[in-house]
Image 1: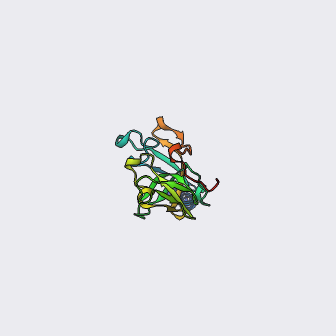
Image 2: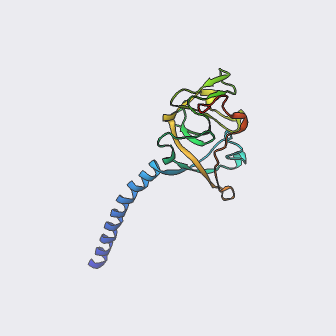
Image 3: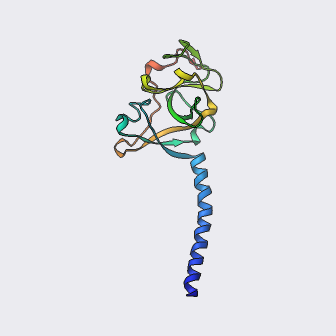
Length: 175
C-alpha cells in the first residue's frame, strides 16, 4: 500500500513540474509567436469563407511578423476593431502611411494615410466594416498577420499578399 502511494506521489510531482513549465511556455508562444483563429462573416470573401455562412475558415495568425509593425500592401491582418476594442477583425492592407487611397464610401473621396496608420478593407466590399467606415487604422491596433488557411483541409493553403489592381493607392510613398 505504501509503495502505491509513493508511485502516485512521484507521478503527481512530475506532472506538476511539467505543467508549471508547459503552461507559461504555451501562453508565451500563443501571445508572442502564433495562434489560430476562426474567421466569421463574409467581409473577406472570396479569399476567406468562400462558402458563406456554411463554413468558417481557420487561419494561422503570425504575431511575430507584425511585432515591428512591418506590413505590406496586400497582407491579410488581424487587428483590434477601432469601434469595439473587445472584437478582432481581419482585413487586407490596402495602403500604408503616406499613401493616397481612393475610398469606397468614405466621407472623403481621397484620403492620405497618416504616419503610423494603415488603410484596411475587406475583399467583399459591400459587406465589410473597414477603413471606408472608420478611416485609417493605427498600427498599434495590429494583432497578427494571417499566413495560412488551416481548416477545412480541402482549403489548406498559404495566404498570398495580393492587392487587387483596382485597389492600388493613387499615390504611394515609394513613388
